[in-house]
Length: 458
Image 1 (cartoon, helix red, strand yellow):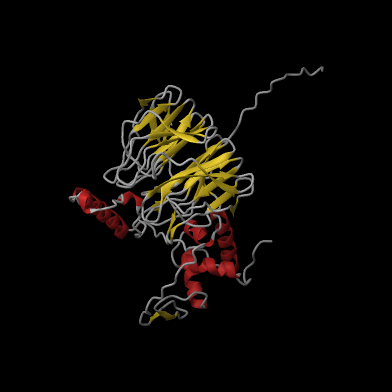
Image 2: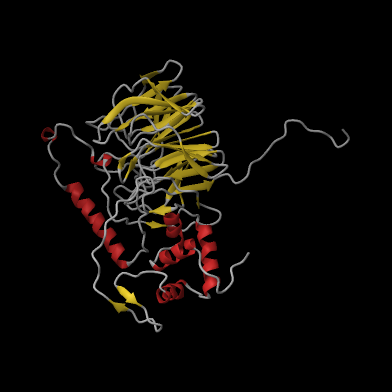
């Protein structure tokens, strides 16, 4: 039933009015209220109909006049709109609930924010050229790439159109440095880092219902650890603990009974590696071993429950990404605490050898990589550079091309997976931990070829 003028606003509508008055966009309101952007639009249409206003500005003024919202520093708003100021109150600090942390407010890009971005880039350059502490002065070195430094977000969310990236139900907890894989119409997100530290959470998203539920937590709270589907099990090797030290422990999750078991340990402790699967085996590339970034390849065979070493990639790096395309595994991007990498190497499992492929258009560390429709899709990065697009790789021409991105600027250590005809990008870091979940329909239609033909007479 459509809303009518003069009807009272519901509690949810009052909440949305408060967020509109605070200057949030529909997308930002959706993140704060755990609603979809379309649902926010419906609420706003109803609010406009009930109040008779024609713009967000009119709505804000009316809300102040009617006392629906409390504006800091303003005690009253007379009918002519003139505000009476009072001395500002001391801010109060609240500890956010660990399971439902508040979303950061992402204001529009003003001149001040552009200046902040420029200052941040200059600071990054200065940090890169400063002399490093000699290795001998630190008993247990920790790579700076393993630690996030909270700051005011300096990103902008790019608008999405009806035929491109779409937002799904957000993650229950904002986090990055996660392991993500897909299995039987479900997405699995394990571990990672939150604003309250490491987590052992396992969250499961049902694509048909659009709902999240919690599974049995991983036996250890670790970050910078991947997860991959091998047969009917989900493999999660290694990861970093709260001190940034890598582990060698390998855990296996069984979706059938929601249980974890321990498998053969990695040949060495590792985190921040790249992970992919091929013909029932898991392939791990690179990573951080607690001292240096590695140029390593390890192969896990579930039949023998054993890891073996294989031919090594040419470049030592961490925070790269890997994906299987046909009979090859592509290993791209990365970060080594000094620079992001645009390197693209491809591994041939049957021949146990490496070949070169065209580099990314831009260096990307902490990116996601997946294959679908005979192409590769690389999302995210931005550790040391500002990113305004994602990339797609065509193996026939050995070229990368530009595709749009739902988040511009810094978007790293996210989860990326392909299932059926769609991409799914989950969480990550963009100046703060995020819980956004995006999907992109790569193959919007399918072709069905019948195997048996019948004539009309039959």
